[in-house]
Amino acid sequence: MRDSKQRLVPISMVDDYDMEINDFVIKHTQRAREIQTLLRAFKREVFDDCYAFQELLAERYESKKKKGGSKGGFSFTSYDGALQIKITVQDRIVLGPELQIAKDLIDECVHEWSSGANDYLKVLVNDAFEVDKEGNLNTGRVLTLRKFKGKFPDERWVRAMDAIADAIMVTSSKAYMNFRERNGEGKLINIPLDLAAL
Image 1 (cartoon, one colour):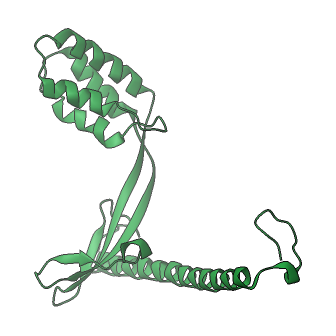
Image 2 (cartoon, helix red, strand yellow; image 1 turned 180 degrees about the vertical axis):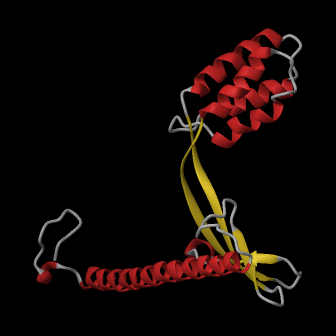
Image 3 (cartoon, rainbow, N blue to C red; image 1 turned 90 degrees about the horizontal axis):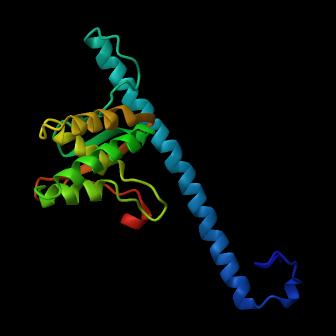
């Protein structure tokens, strides 16, 4: 048998306990792969069915909307309202080089305003441009700054907000699917298909 260092070990030298653990792990991992394959096929089937229903609706209302064209997603609910299939579409956003210009302009503003600047604004700006362990910015935090575009009369701030808007690039979109059911309190909750959530 091959060991963890990829050496071949005669079976007669492998402890019975190690052999049992090996068989146990292989058995359950193979089953997990089978279930993963079933889930992948199930996901594709449900997506196809949802998009087929969407196309039927488009025909019903004589819309020329193409398959999968819903930006924000959509949901299908059972007649009694107790069950729901929800599709959400999220864009993956990256920020281009304009972001550095925006940060420089914002830094100028905050530095100049620092004597009278609202502490909340300072925290918000510092938090927005804080990087994680991998050196990546939190895109959502940066985009939050755009809410303040018209709040400050400084032209540099306005240009900084424009630079943030220009920095936004949608690189891809991904559709997510959730199955939900109404609980005893009448609230729709997700039916978890993730082992960690069970």
